[in-house]
Length: 128
Image (tube, rainbow, N blue to C red; front, side, top):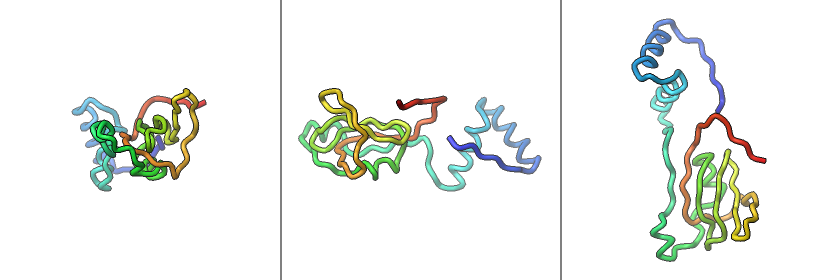
């Protein structure tokens, strides 16, 4: 995640430290929550298009492009249009896992049927 730095008044620093202690969390969590609320940008949300029930009912058409889905998070799972492999999104890159086990980076205009995505904060991840 990007690192932000700001000079703030001492009174805000004291209030920030008190909130960190009250919530038993860290500075990043409090600042992220405050910025999210102030800017009106949700964090820790899940983006879902379609359901497993729709797949069972035979709805396999591509509803959303890979490019569009990548705007909603950097980690996720899904199914490609017409059940053409599984989608795995890691570190903002979409991959298509074919039935043979072959893994390809997904085309940005490829269609997806069902998927769940979010932004994931973890200590580290690595793609070979």
